[in-house]
Amino acid sequence: MTYLIWSALASTAVISLEFLFRRGLVWQDNLIWLIPAAVVANYLIYRLVTTAPTYVLAFAAFQLTNLTLRTGLSHFVLDEPIKKGSLVAVVALAAAIGIGNAWK
Image (tube, rainbow, N blue to C red; front, side, top):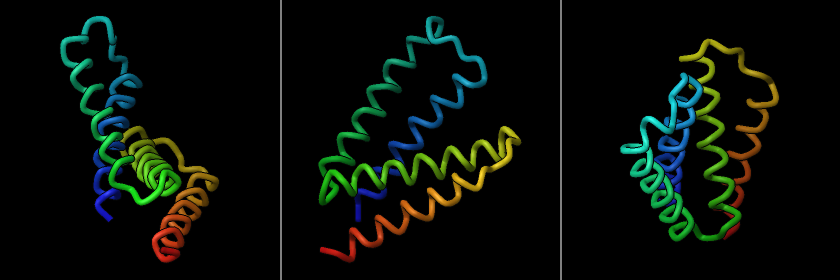
């Protein structure tokens, strides 16, 4: 289950960079810290993939944490409405991870 922790960390790194770009960050002016941030995000994804039991569970876990963080950020920080499809996708991905862990 440590792959879920790596998934949450990787999603946090990726979504925080995405949020900064949505707020108008210019990447050419900030390469000095964007390159290390991208390296950290790639390392966290590497750890996620190597600790997950299967690639399918790694993909589902990353998508679940990514979608959850993106939905929460959009709703609570950017004041955008949450679409029903996003909530259905979160439930479906959580069910897929639960079934994948129970199936072992």
